[in-house]
Length: 415
Image (cartoon, rainbow, N blue to C red; front, top):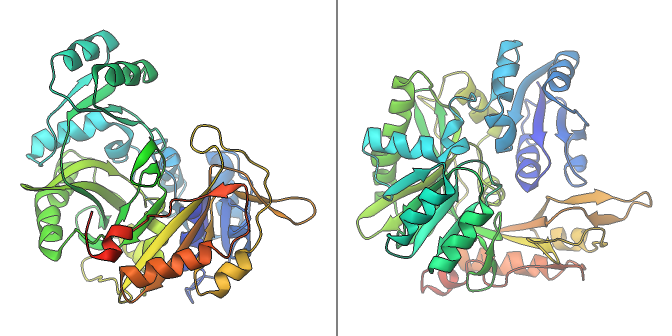
């Protein structure tokens, strides 16, 4: 079977890397891809939905796997299916679970799904009035796609005012939840739900969870705080009613659903949904997955998940993101990266996110988050040591990383 993966980040590199291992894959394409993806797939420049459809027809693509959220929310899967091309991912109507936080909060209220108390505002003035009368801290979220960075936890009125000024569109304001965050992934085929692992990611740019929010600076999988009992509660109280309600609304969900959870003293509560694999969580998941990823994606796309159970490698995985200096505000691109082969010689996998090749063949940074260095181990501590050993093998003066990913979990303290 010929496959086409849409996207250019570390998530898409991890998906291509895993799909390439399937005996059922003949040719693997990625649009647009990156320098690392080019080692396992043929990278193509496809400008829009029409170009993707034409390419899929011309190359007998058996399945298109859509990685990022923007084309999902924009209706790429709908366009592909209308053209008779199989695709993995939700429809635009179902992708509103990520595309509109207001939509998701309304669904939670309808289905009695545990989540933080909230209010949605189109008007900046009304939002400012609400914050002025609300206990602090509050969580302010852009009601739309924001590449994982449209969230501000405001501890003061001044921080809240600045956040609202920076988010000119509709916003959702939530009560602040206390607990440990975890990411739970499930495959869905309109009605069946199959758990697909968990992870915890690290959003802040600096050690000790300091500094600006980012797209993610690292991850550990499985999520240490998400016990089997808590996962069962999250599936029963959050995910299952979501899928049932979406079906009842006439917008059934097919694809991978990513539930961002806060594990509170009262149990799991939904922070938000994403309608695709997380990044860097996907990298941490794919190195643990023993099942054929193509089989799983096809089962979801074709409504055959009822008897599907993914197999996992024992132990844990840790991903450490190496980012370009200046990230997330103004990453400096163009710096030369060396030592990737030495890092992979340690047994780690180095997934590329923002990389490209110069004319002379040198690997250079071309984005903010640049490399996702990922390793496995018998436990979190072993995976963490292996990941940082690989990081330290990379020669990149223009990059940086957090040095505390999974550190407290590895020490047994917890986070």
